[in-house]
Amino acid sequence: MLNLSQLIDLIPSQRHDEKSVDSRIEEFGEWVTARIDSIEEHDEFNDRSSGFLSAFEYLEKLDIEHLNFNDSALKISSSIISDKQIFDAEACKKRLENIIDFIYVTTGTTDNNIKCQFAPYLRHVKKWSEYPLIKQSKSGKVSISKKVITDLGQIKKEEVVKQYSKYLAVSIKDSEVENTITMILNGFLNCIFDCGNYQRLVDVIRSLASVDEIGKRSILETFAVFQLRGSSAAKSGHGPENKLRNILEQWGMISGEDFNPYDVTPEAILGLERGDKKTRAYDFVFPYKVTNMATSIFVQSQIYAGDSGSVSHKNVDQIPLSRRNVKDLFPNAIFLEFVDGAGYCTALAGDLKRILSMDDTDSFFQANTVVVNLRRAFMFAKHLYPAELISWILKILLFSGNEETSVESTVKSIYSPGEVERVFPRTGLSKLNCELKDVLIIDKNIRTSAAAFIIIDSISVLAKSSECNHAIIPGKINYGINRTQWNDLSDYISSRIGRENFNCAVDYLENKLGSLRFNC
Image (cartoon, rainbow, N blue to C red; front, side, top):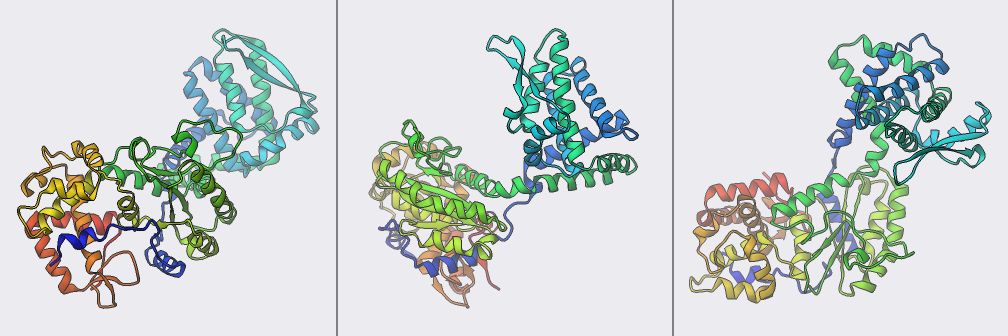
């Protein structure tokens, strides 16, 4: 059976994982997450689908079926303006956004196209020489100004909605403001209808009116998928990033203290001005607001489920300069890459190799290897958190071989006393020199995570690469232990912490973290 010194020896003495580039790429392919997150898992998908339903119902009532696009644009604009008398400002604003998005997707236009076409359209088709703008002072006073049409530049949906919001903010009827917003909305819709396929909008409204609620919802959800797929591809990393933040909180880390709750620049961490220098923000920094830590871990996410070549290439090109900027402020910084997604197995394989080949890429992790590769960096940096502290308490109690071993003195010989004392109050224990029964009644998330750490670390001590292995963990190909070793390990650990706690930890590793696999 294992002994405590073997587990302590797992703590790395080098910041670099000491894996070759080929080994890293091999490991990536073995543990890649084939399915990252679908568009339907984004909150924006549900919002957009519901918004489309609201827009359809609104336009259906206006009965634009027999109108040409000029008359239709005017009727829709007039109705939107009159909503002010019935609904609150936020509802009116949201309705306009939904209507424009619905019109975009049914006419085959996009904000990216219309923002460029709007000014030339007004100038050459509508013969406008000036564009009216609603201005609002800090005191709330509203006035109208004019902008020469040749100086207008791009006008996005967002700007049109802002103009509408200023109109909604006028508390008394003002015909000049009302005429201005009517011109803006009417001109914007005319541009969309003339540059896009207005008849398809009419046909879609007619078709949706004839199907049942299930069919209607399916069609509108399809529209939402189509419209969001570009933005969702750009945001493909956010799902895994959010899941990682949830995992870190389950381990007892505090958002805003142990790690940053949102992307942050190295200057912002120190409260410095960014100046004119362009500095790429980091997705994760450990620790974030913990003082007296000699080493900080900087993580950037590069997650692509498909071929987003231009975005990936740009991000890879930015890495060297970004890291140099960090080293100016944090000389002992460790750099990890959170890389994942099937895109790196195919179209973006070259980008993956570039990232993993960089001398200062100290290590990398994937969604399925967080508990091994990210924890390795935490161990090297001696960054402690409740689940890790509890796991060491359990390791001492289970594997020291001496009931007289002091938990407190042993833990404080592994981590600094200050770091232990910082984290200990969050463990749920009353004292460090505790008994096993005390640990088994603390918060379930912390308890399960700690037990999972023990299982994965125990396997790491014994692991070898073999096709005969039964329990497989991240590392080399088929890296793990055979069935006999697994049975012995599971029998011993479960006999000490209880079969239910052990099974919960195994389920957590296998199904939640994706870091433990079993061969038949």
